[in-house]
Length: 76
Image 1 (cartoon, rainbow, N blue to C red):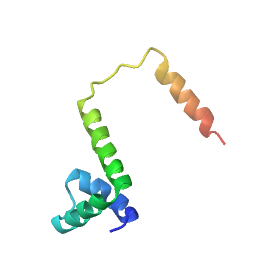
Image 2: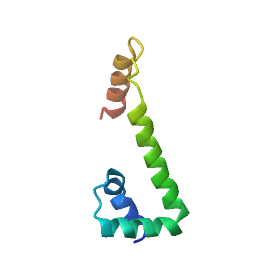
Image 3: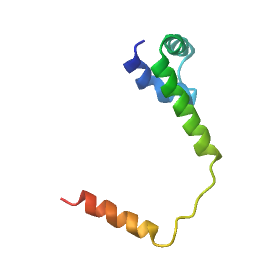
């Protein structure tokens, strides 16, 4: 497995959907590749933060302003 292969399998690995033999290959690559280890750790931390987060109410008018900015950005 190389770094590109790892990135393609990342979601399945983090979600626990990767078959055991592929997990072993994935984890073997992680042992020797610091950049991929950093990526996997960051994804795991992001997921934990997202799951632990509480809904945040947007300030009045923010949603309308955001939608207008997006429309202006994507107008032909």
